[in-house]
Length: 474
Ligand code: PLP
Image 1 (cartoon, protein in one colour):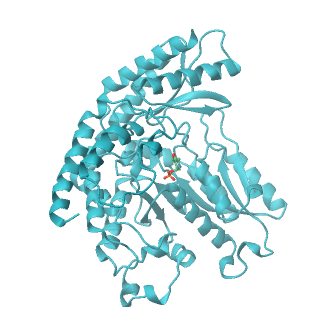
Image 2 (cartoon, rainbow, N blue to C red):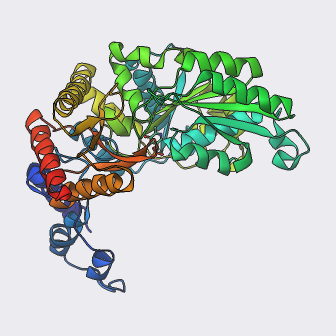
Image 3 (cartoon, rainbow, N blue to C red):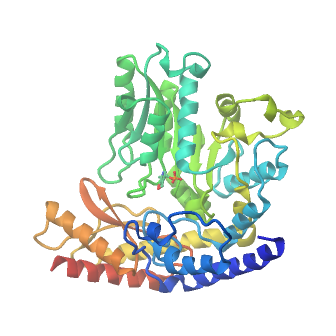
């Protein structure tokens, strides 16, 4: 591709994306392709010679677009909202175009310093004190892994400089609620704690929040048998039903044992741009680390996960490596982000956060999140007012957990009905919802937050849910 061809093709690419987005609402939300269908639509061997650009656009239209479940669709209510805001997309394009690579500060000073600025902007937007400093990771899973490694090293007196986890020290224990995201268990396993030392703490029957008394009892019990309570992972906005663990209480209990507190606010952290939501993470200033994903509800394009810490020196001590080829005279005066996480090479992710905040402004972001809260309240009220339908968990933010409970249906038959009507909505293409288990029973989550969702999209979806449940019951 010559520079002139690149320019022309680039314009076509942007036009194609703009057209795709303009037509999105008319497309089915869920991918309808069969397993393997897309793979077999491609040549099995790579082309030896250059192929025409037009074929790329034809393949996009014919094969790739139907093979995507569209998170940016106005009737996407699955998993969690994830960024598809144009303002952020522009920054992502620019990051790709610049081809900058963060290895050292010197390899792209702008990459480091724009990241310092934008992570601090987000800190301010969510009302955190200046005691926090941030770094952009790829995902919350990585941030939580880093947090647990930092906790492990604090509790073990930097065992990594000795025998690591192969030493004779007492087992270290991680605590998280039964509602915590699977990434917490994965991080604990990867960090070497072992399944036997990850304690699942009971949650409140009504709110699904971690019970502080249960945490305190588990920690006492572990102390009693010679284990060391190492880290508590509190969830601010659980994946299944947006439960909020009582951070202030958990911080106080963890402090008695010198345990690290990491807060997983991957999805719900974005809500803290609204002052009225901040009581939900009361006590946050007492935590050691925190992850929130601007690539979820805030609107940034995936991937963009913000990891915030109160003790960057500890983080750097745990993560730092300093081979000669990465050393620089400037190191003492700058932030060296490769020492703030696992990856050495880092993308210029801060650009998509900058363009998002710069072009939208914080006020518009707040308004969008408030609108989603309104949508959730509207849907919850409509469901609660409809016979046979039930909202099965509190709705603190934008996710409504719902079940259709026709008379005479319970147990496994009710589960089968729930999954059937959810599938029916999804395969219809009208909307996309996620079924999940809460309290041992299947229910369906309706998670607001796609940037273009309006009330009418929600009304259409609620109608599709009722139609699907009505026909599923027959
Ligand atoms: N934590 C919570 C509460 C989540 O909802 C999710 C995503 O679903 C994650 C962590 C994982 O996020 P990521 O895909 O960025 O690792």
